[in-house]
Image (cartoon, rainbow, N blue to C red; front, side, top):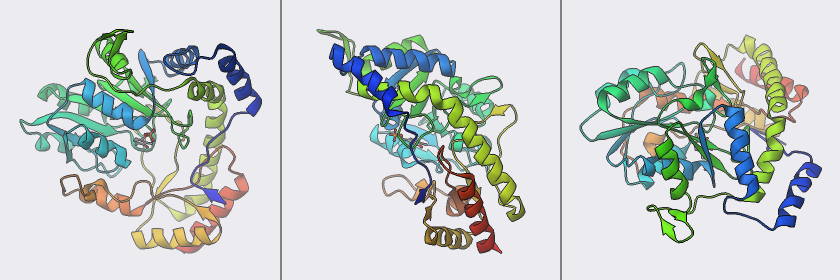
Length: 358
Ligand SMILES: *Cc1c(COP(=O)(O)O)cnc(C)c1O
């Protein structure tokens, strides 16, 4: 069976070696040596100033919203994973959907200003499939109107933009290290920021508000992650360049074999170095997408409709008219892409797609 993704697992001996250290010192969680080592390794690898390892990407988003004291309305994208919207609502804010750009599938910056009201406090945008949002324009609008900017960068691990980490944009970027992501720790996530004061606040917020053993700096929650998860991350991280090389080769093969089908793909802005986390394609209609899904499933191949349905249909979010996102969500499909996927499988998938579309 071929699924949309398959978690990369490092050689078990490498994980055992890390775990032996944990067993020897008996330190399982609460800012242990492996969590500290992973945070430092990720800061260096990604080229960011502050990075806090947390339990998952959803808590990373919730903490970011909380730490920035965002209350009222939040302009956000209707084309993302549900956690982008649910985190806003969970933090008692109101998501206001702004439609996406049909080329990048990210928030359309030209529509932001018309959506701003006195209640607007922030923008939460997703670098969908690792494609950078229009960060310059978003930040201009945010500055002009005094808004905070959070990027859900769950797909943007390692993406470079104009020669530096894409994660350096916005007040905060959040990452997910869920098993389905390019770099993972089983479950996990991180919050990235350049702001020293905010980093200090996030550090106590993820640890019940503790400043010292018996002192509290403010309100907090338990969003820490463990040595067991950090150990897995430390074993996966050295393999990331190899994972990206393999993915790039598979992406180039898909591009070549699917060229005759003339499928639309999201466009990367110039000066972007991608990391090949996903292979999204847009069919001409939902009916065509469903036909292709059926044909693939009959061959034991299970792609995923990332992201369907469009988030404007969530029962707990205010509805909004986002025709581009609604259309895109009905036609986009992520094809299988992972380290162990074989060239022959890519060829088979491409052939089934072409035969079904013909
Ligand atoms: C995976 C993902 C999340 C949630 O991350 P978890 O670590 O699973 O909580 C949030 N946003 C986007 C865009 C994602 O793809």
